Length: 242
Image 1 (cartoon, rainbow, N blue to C red):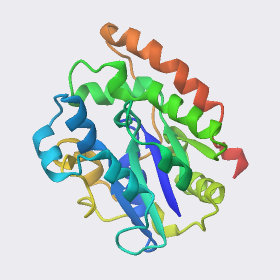
Image 2: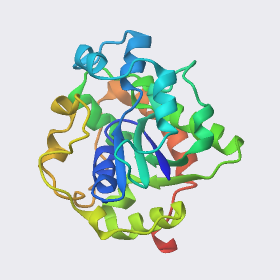
Image 3: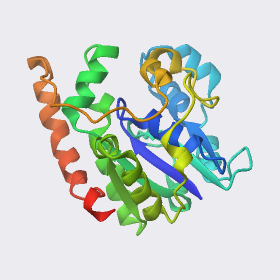
């Protein structure tokens, strides 16, 4: 089984990759389209030159690999995708060959975390509108589209991971609940900039507290991101379903 986990940045996405990477039967791929996205857009990102040098910049090749078996020969292939990397022109026919999950997080939490790492974020940077658009495309193709909220995962990791595995038709593995500190062998080169907190972790963080207060300059972006978040939230797996 190939699993495409669609997320924006600062959204528990690396911890979820570590959870699947802790399974002996699952290979993982960290942000497959990142190098192609940067090469196509010429955007300035932290470690941009290193990302392009280390990754595959031909999106067609990346898409073909996404539809193929895990390079390590595992039965399952988990792919951590950033929704904002799927710009116009990126190949999408491979969508029909994978299982899709949409990892969402309240935009106030995303913006507070993102702005601490990269100044002046834009709506395009945080991926909410792209996430809703990809969700709608997957549904229009007649494909299953699971939605899971990172807040719920942190509230009840085992219960939510069991629900997610059930939705995928995948047996739950208790190994998903913990991993060694220090990162994963398949981390992208950008881990040095973005993954400091998750590298210190050995499992999912404690439940989240109240929503953070955002500076006024982020109010407009927050309002624009809230609508697509709430649209997908309506489809999210619920704890009472477990």
